[in-house]
Image 1 (spheres, rainbow, N blue to C red):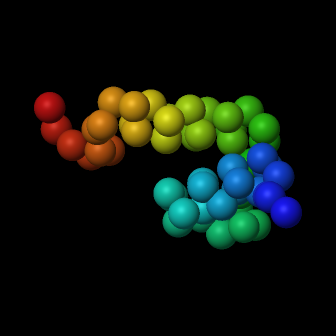
Image 2 (spheres, rainbow, N blue to C red; image 1 turned 180 degrees about the horizontal axis):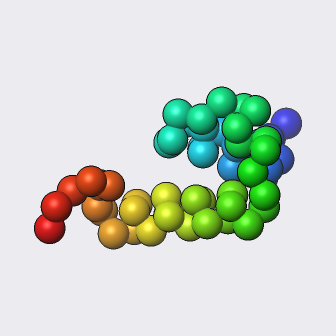
Length: 53
């Protein structure tokens, strides 16, 4: 059985930002979408946050 998209997103955000499940649960769908987009852009750009260019 595979995890639902919401479970996958929650896990990804908690892992990337160090948030607790309760913190992720309190977020709106808009907030979740923005943070997931930021992670996707970071991966596609190959950049790390905090890296000075």
